Image (cartoon, rainbow, N blue to C red):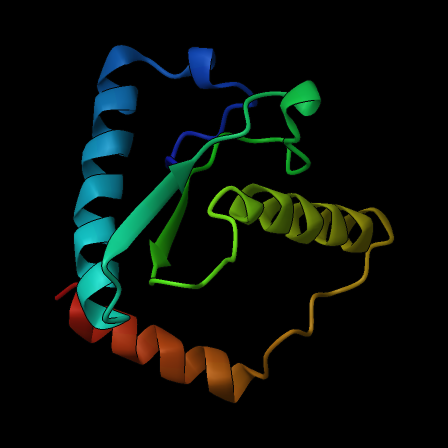
Length: 117
């Protein structure tokens, strides 16, 4: 998830934007954890290129977690790195992401819309 005001680095957000981003992340996390029947959440930010940030704007990964989803808990960070690099390559090549069909995304959007109503 990302703030409405697009900035490259976390420090570029105002105090109010920072508070709003984290409060929203908390609310989204609670609902996603319930929806996905998870038992925990991982919140991550890569802030700048040396941290692994490949999409050049502030965003928080809100990831519902379940027991055994990764053999070693910290492997999730490697998985995030791989996905971010794949996305960066696709964006750099100006190739539209086609991970899911419009029908699949529409269905997911409808479910999440109901979840957050």
